[in-house]
Length: 115
Image (cartoon, rainbow, N blue to C red; front, side, top):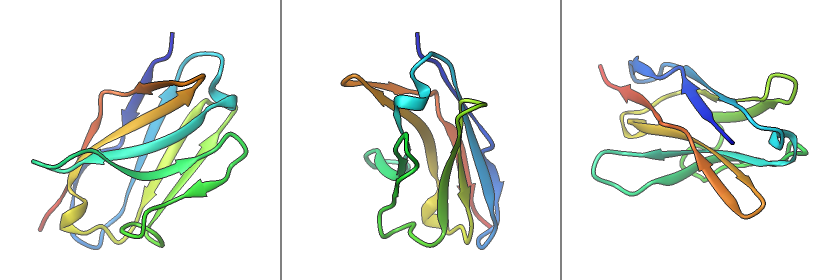
């Protein structure tokens, strides 16, 4: 049974920073590709950052240079450091785990970027 629990969202001013965390349960964390997705209001869910079990990362151009994904295998946790936040980063952010052809999702954490 895989459970993903996100935390760290909130309200932040433009230009500010937030750090999201996602705590995972289950025995396959180290073998899993992990990712952060987001769903802005009225829009489809989109990939924000991904990291393989070996630590290789990938970002879309919209967040490259501003966001950084990392993982702690011992704590079974991934992080998303978000700097230089913009109003268009406002969304519900979801943690995702991929293993054995299965996708698992957290419940999401709200990020609002507004002055």
